[in-house]
Length: 205
Image 1 (spheres, rainbow, N blue to C red):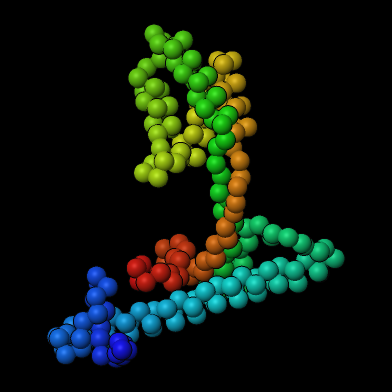
Image 2 (image 1 turned 90 degrees about the vertical axis):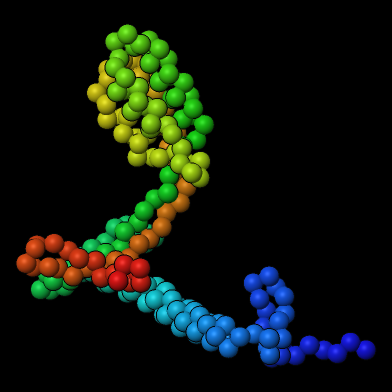
């Protein structure tokens, strides 16, 4: 009959092996206890921060509804970007909505038209604009297109009909597939006239 293993008599190592407690060095036990204690405290702090953020955003939405009631207006759904200031102007709370946008297959059609423009302009166009366009269509390490760089092409003052058609295709290919709300608090530095974020990120403290 196999004797049951008492977890209190063993510690599991990084390879998943059970090591008898009497074979684990005291310094390794102390290190393990320190790390576990810090992680548990961090998880509790993280849960508190999540609860604070959710409560803060709920209170801001409720305040916006209250403010709207003074004008007999009912605001439903997503409220959009909101900035609230303290009465003395030294503090502000912000809720920002960031939309996640991607390009559909029409972006490849736009790239094809742009390539045709470059072929047509070979003698007239400089290497700078070619480099700008090629850079805009580069993908990052995750294989994603940089939305800002693609959209920056639409600001170029080029009157060519095919180019303009390609820019229209870029605009049509952009799709909003999601959004995320961000909550931030700021304190005003009156000596510098700037707003300093109240960081809740341990790495930034």
